[in-house]
Image 1 (tube, one colour):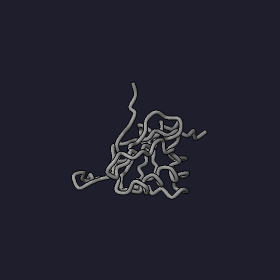
Image 2 (cartoon, helix red, strand yellow):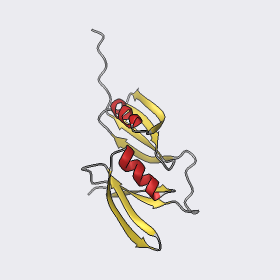
Image 3 (spheres, helix red, strand yellow):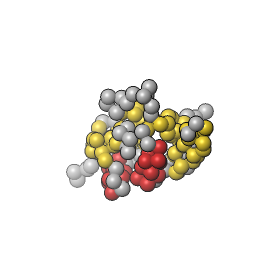
Image 4 (cartoon, helix red, strand yellow):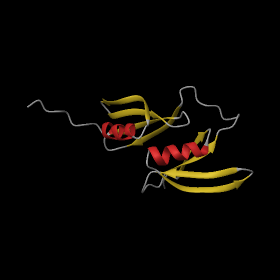
Length: 128
């Protein structure tokens, strides 16, 4: 068993597709008409099973006040990933830092959703 899809509400499907494919390097795995102008759009990092389904936000879907999506993406090195994503134009709401539980940063997507980046704790730097 694994999580297949996490729904992410967005204001503009095409703008969000562009952000996740161009800035994060994800792949669009599906873009199918659902009738009445709706689309089933999924995006995922390469070689993973879990994907985002982008759902157009409507009047009944309020934006969270803190904008935190609840999504945390695991990376090998949060500092290296932040450098790479910054060069692609990704805006960080919290720059990378080291916590006792690992590396941490937060970034904002094109639709105002804020996601976390986490990496394993770095080995302490030796002073020898």
